[in-house]
Image (cartoon, rainbow, N blue to C red; front, side):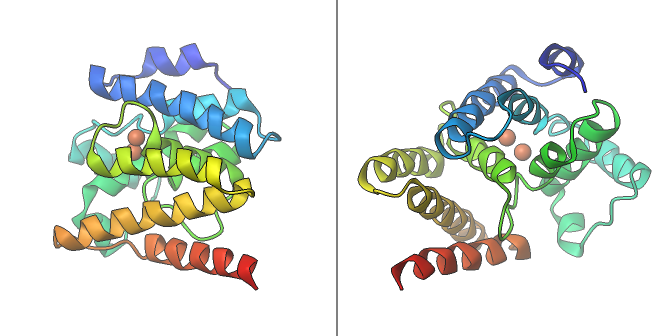
Length: 202
Ligand SMILES: [Fe+2]
Ligand SMILES: [Fe+2]
């Protein structure tokens, strides 16, 4: 497995995205410390550094990588190329940098989320949403919501699951308002975390 410098020196990202990437690394480690102390922070950092590795690649290069790694694309992914970077970055993390499977899976799912995410998937997914440099309204609101929930809720898992639920709602509302396609995994994730939260009540 590589180290952080190996990934950073191979990265070719704009200043803005690089700042975001470092923000994700810090936020992911913070989330791991707060909720999943069993996670290896060094590996969490490497996955965070890798998560947008291919985000600025042109569409043609993304599609080439998908073919090279035999990534099956859904119709939605073919129509929405933004989703491809998560998959191609996960493959490169495994193939070129030998990141462990749980780290690659977290990179793979960081854009859409999914039901019953692993601890690793949760920290990378949520860190991407709430890292300190994200400055769009939805991210700022979610960051504040998480901080308040962590103070208000007695149970940290409840605070985390409520924040996840809100993140999916924010994404889905945005996609609907923009008349964009909705990813089925995000819908499943929303339903799953609603059920998780309801299960606590009964
Ligand atoms: Fe991303
Ligand atoms: Fe990102």
